[in-house]
Amino acid sequence: MSYPSTRLRRMRRDAFSRALMRETTLLVSDLIMVAFVVEGSGKREAVPSMPGVFRLSIDELVKLAGDCVALGIPALALFPSPGQDVKTEDAREAWNPDALFQRAARAVKARYPQLGLIGDVALDPYTTHGQDGLIDAAGYVMNDPTIEALVRMALAQAEAGFDFVAPSDMMDGRIGAIRLALEQAGHVHTRILAYSAKYASGFYGPFRDAVGSAGNLGSGGKHTYQMDVGNSDEALREVELDIHEGADAVMVKPGLPYLDVVRRVKDRFGVPTFVYQVSGEYAMLKAAAQNGWLDERTVVLETLTAMKRAGADAILTYYAIDAARWLTRGE
Ligand code: PBG
Image (cartoon, rainbow, N blue to C red; front, top):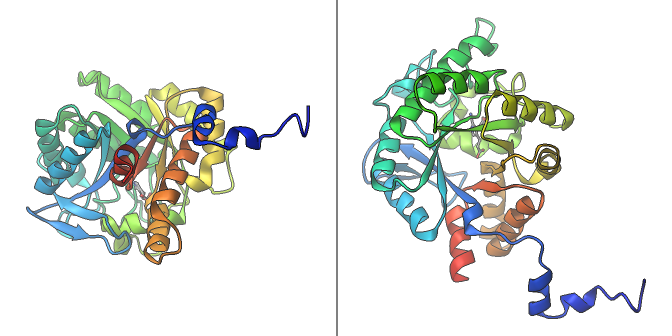
């Protein structure tokens, strides 16, 4: 059948038939908000490379958690921005039960137990060198010693009340080690969100400013553990391993430039597949919007819908609260 019996524009003509044939609809329940926490009180420190994003003290973070709950956003992913004074070569602050990150989790869960809370498991905010793991004399990130630190870190987060621990470090074997330790400690309900296919991306720049690791990292890259931009078969191997090691959900990161990877992962494994619209993606959209070059609401909802269409079950995004408002109030 072809023209004129087939006219694809017929169904596009009116809003009602466009609505009826729409395959993918973005929902507030698809969104995960992302936030940074700092010491202090009443503090909202602007992140210069991410206009509209703030490092929040715990009291302000609890308010943001309240906004998520009020809007119906199911979960909040948290990152620490610790002071330079607690950074060490061995990152021991990461598993201190009284560290900022653990206190923040207890405060949020005490006030909003129904909000899913996701803790980042990687050493970069806590190391003097800004790498995600422990380094040897040559500066190489050592896999197995790093895993021991990550296990301690994940246990401290589970004890503080995080619902999900989310290893973002890309060490080999860390999901299995963390899963075993959680089981042995009786944390059988703590979920693991594995950053399985995390690429060595330039789009993390603004995040490294936000958590204060950029200066420490200097020109050192993360190419010896994060994935090469050119690969996607390797992403499937990473995902497969993480599922076998005990991940409850897997993630692809960054988002928009990697939607082919999201689609392959979802088609192959059919497991909960999350995607992360990272700091650089946020910064690009925000900068263009602030210059009047793009309509922010339109392009943000478009990118998030595209991620869902590609197969993502949930999306981590700094835009979650804005998007939830746009979706529910049509603002
Ligand atoms: C570090 C980590 C990074 C991000 C999340 N966890 C940065 C990195 O790998 O250097 C990036 C998030 C973003 O850019 O929004 N473990």
